[in-house]
Length: 412
Ligand code: AMP
Image (tube, rainbow, N blue to C red; front, side, top):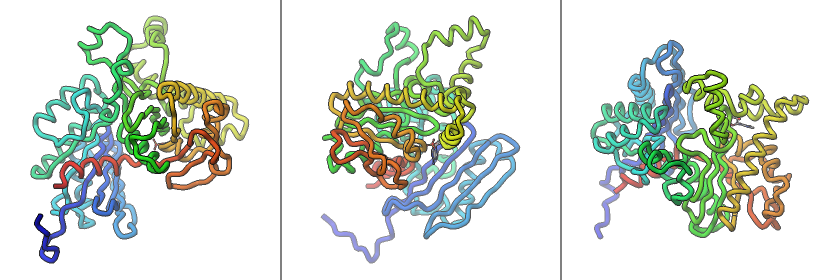
């Protein structure tokens, strides 16, 4: 073994830029994986519109004032170049020798990508081949990758797939009960999403319980504007609530979640709606927003406190669906060690956590009201000591997980 001469050694590249390209937005975060610190973050929104906006926040050394740019940013290429300029203004430019890699969140990895993958021309072609199963998501991810490669062709770029964690689901959980030839011809099956969050949170929950991930069974409830549940047995996902697309499963901010598929034929035949109109209805105008006009849980709780019946019904429908999934996933897992809440609603809404667990004592689930009321950004238990199954709140951190998976691939 050679011992490095630390006096002469230049610092090893330890920074990772994480890029999350949405259809009209780009989120970025620069992390230093040597100490897991955050150096900068930013968001470009309304890309392609006259009212585009970039907000960049320096985070190094205690952080600095956010800076804002407004005015048309025509495409993702221009958005990433603008973000790179802001990073350079803080001395964190993409040309820095300290940058080890760029990690891209890619929504759909199909069946091919079960692990984070260094992006080659061939990998990019494969991601493009998945566009028909993820028409809303993968094109933006691909643009982000192309631009980043143009800016730093020499730098490793890594794709971290939202679907990867769920590829361990058994075939009987991943298949829909439809004609097999039709399903296979069009790659129709349950893929699941939010995988980086489910992976990170289930691992953190095991650590909170003082066990290795292999030794615990966990139900993860990722409740953000998008929401999904997963059943994780010994560190491997065995079931998740999202399917071919992120529409299936829980009630979400603007998505219906589970619905009788015949509702769509009915809307077409009886209401005369087109496939695109039904898509918009179920993805953008349903869920909490469709039920009561608001998708922010804080606003819904405020309205309930004022006696608003529509907000109360929306809340009850949301919680009822959650309970059904907790029950179903308890049955799937057989033995449950923890139920864990994460993401915007899961981390912050004590009433949702309380209502979702209420009445589940027979499953070993109890919430302690005082612990549930504590506001904290740390992983914590909210169940009493005597409870058979732990109930926990674990803040998710998809950027850190993407950066960690990216760095693990390129750090050698
Ligand atoms: P996410 O997609 O994880 O960023 O979650 C966004 C959602 O979290 C928002 O739409 C709100 O419904 C919810 N949320 C954020 N902060 C709070 C809070 N303090 N209390 C209740 N819900 C919250």
